[in-house]
Length: 440
Image (cartoon, rainbow, N blue to C red; front, side, top):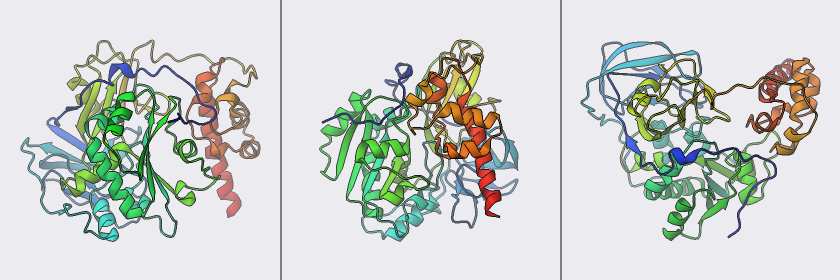
């Protein structure tokens, strides 16, 4: 069985030893949870509860009549004390439901998600998945019911993304080790809905325990475990597809356009939680790591619990952190406060020491070409970034700025510590604005 990969990429220090052997620890919420009404791509939900209402675990507290959206559920039972804008992990205020936790965890029994999935129609399964509020949990938050309803596209392959190529993150690793059967259930559900012929589980070869466990499961021939080279950004959707199937997703197209659907590990397991356990998506597994954390590990956390409470449950800090990041260090977002909530897309929260969070001073570009060598999208990052700084948006567009996946490989490898990703992100924003203005 060969090891598959893609052209380009980097090999950063992966720092997974801090958490990869840590059994998942379940946490319960504190006195209060703050649940944003937008934890997904698409339209923000309208609140379905008011101040003073009593809510139960799993109850829908926000929804909206829009195709691209996903309902939001309570992670605790208790009394709604506010429905108001609160600071979220994007650095902006989002309308949120604030619930005083009564500690009883009384479950809502009105959703009726459970059912024999083999007897349910495709339409019934998709509607159940929507009611369960399942979204992509790898970071994007794309509603699952839309991804599993590709309209007139013929889906041949399903890929489960078990690469987890970001440094520090181990939640997918531990989830595959401890919940493999639930994951396989989810794959079978997706195959039924999409009518896919094959499914692949892509796992980087720095997880031999996962690969060995899955192979011992005696998977049917339709489901194949594919070892991948440990390389960043191996888990990027387009590169995962290319490495496993040799299919290239063209510019401006989606994976579904070439007959492929890619899903995250936790997203897949959420299908089991909904259809077998009757539980909507109101918890997720989160890597809590970084050298400023006393007890790094993987924690099963209720949505709405604050970063501060999660770090406290992990023993607190060994020293004041220099930087807090949601997600991984390559593509994650730095946080301005610890008092923001865990949401459906929170794969990890990292607390970095002064050394880990060091910010380098930029030097002039050496034109060494290293950023070009490692770019997985075959772009010229230094040219695009410079064009953006010079406000030469037409040049940035000619050099395909919009194709950048913002993986950070260019910035990581730059000997001059150029802030290339920031420049390219600016270029993408301006190119999009230019294209919109040209269409008017």
